[in-house]
Length: 305
Image (cartoon, rainbow, N blue to C red; front, top):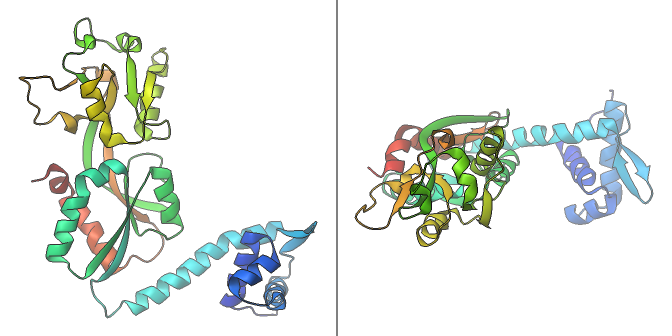
């Protein structure tokens, strides 16, 4: 290791490694192919190893190249964070925060958060992305998001999360449903059809798994939708069962047809909303401020008090 390479060389290597083609990388970076191959050669001399090998007309990474590509994301991400942190030393609590939210969280907290920011923190700009957990976690890893509001689950060890609100998922039907006319137990539910979230959603996975653990077939799903906020309306107008937050039952008028919990103790799922950030990496003053708002005021925001 008697040669040196620069961060710019690592940036060029990363683009070539990602595309698997020097010509395409040169085109994207607006550089000549010799400039990119020269950068790769400097890294190879410094590390005394080959990073690529021929694969027909293309190239592919060696084992050392794969390791360097993996580490390059961390190295270049850290450099970006340091530059950003230095730039923001004097700026105080202002700037843009990129926030990801699962749909149920967005429904309950987006408007209250907007009200808090516009009234108390007018210098903070908010950019939101609403999506399912796997999409949001990928964007958080790639630094496309600063924070994610997500549910409990198998969280990545590279993430740091703080729970700030808990609610309960229960089986729900409309109050005139046949399920309430006989004996209510878990096995009885296999006789009815359901409207549920897709199998990619954690609560759906938990529900299916619970039925199987009790030796029963999974719920008979007639309607599957990722429009989760539409499900309560579907329950009211059909004879379908569903699995939704108990919050949907608050304040209902019991003098007429309404949403009603089907009391099955085995199918009560506690879930926690978390504010999630990367364990390693810089969090701007604006993002830190928003994170602290969720931690300190999350319950009040959810409950609307």
